[in-house]
Length: 485
Ligand code: BGP
Image (cartoon, rainbow, N blue to C red):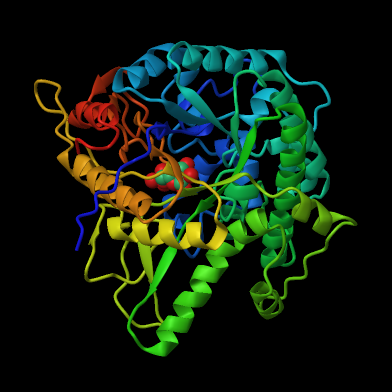
């Protein structure tokens, strides 16, 4: 047997990924309007489980707007990237980043979402950020909406269930493509587009208790996002000829809990329901297997004239995914479940879990990359992967996050194997390269960063940045193009 050694390609992008609402702060500065993301912190902790999937009620929204309920943790200043972006980008450059994923806060550009004229101060902020990245030759990978539906669109249309939101999104996309056409080549339409079907307010600014049939609202809103993404792709190719549009899926890979065929078909169905999103984005049409799902869930997608043609004519140029864990599918309701936040699944006896119950499966990443590349034959960009963990700051200020290094090393090793298996992989962006506000907990203690930020769950702290052990490890990983792990 010939020894085969997999290697990352020379032009492989290395970096990290963030989201405006989780790093910027500048909550109401520079003309920014309210965003759905600004309300997530008002969702009580006990509502943050897979069953409730972080639903927020119209009453909770009313109390948040009236000031009756104070935020659990003010995301108002995030980690203050809005004022510290130069210092932060210099730290990313010190690690050797060649790419950095961020989102444009839609409500900075169109404060209500439906405004005609863009907010110049908002546009100027991202001019400055992209110029800073360019100084260090760091390629921006820009998400148009990272759970950041402007609240004005919720107020006016109940978010993405309103078909009018398509035009407002396309107007926003056209505005930023035009403004940043010489600065940004790689774009992503919606972060984890599957989220609107799991948590409609987070994923699409939709308040479920305002809709008669929540499942109908979720998948109708999703349809509008599919059409909006395809129309934005059309605009992108017109405005930035070498611009690339990616879709983004939280890949929730499922294994059958046992070899029992009943578990196997359940896993196949669970995987189809997840790959459905990339099927539409890449193949440009709804897959047949979803017809049954829609009938069983009383969903009837109302399409506009020409929607099918738009989807078919404007597929994405590349696929991006987040991958954190794998899950199990079982035909029977029994079985020990993990205690994790959001994605509590059956416990896989072969896997360790993070402190938040997310089951750590590096080989699963190789499985996912192989299956998706084989299914679609378009380049794939890993735009989120990482370990949320409690970090301990030692007396001397050092942070020995060997557990994070171990998690990342194992996933990078498997990615390399996937490249060896023939997968066209564009790059790897670790989630949260600098500690930021957790999406599902709205807290700081679930830390992902190579860079520590002095801020706790109550919002206390100096915001001072410091390098963890993983900072230096990742620096070497990048320098060696993934050889020195
Ligand atoms: C993904 C989101 C990111 C990020 C990540 C980690 O779903 O795209 O925004 O938050 O999850 O999740 P959490 O912050 O809840 O640990």
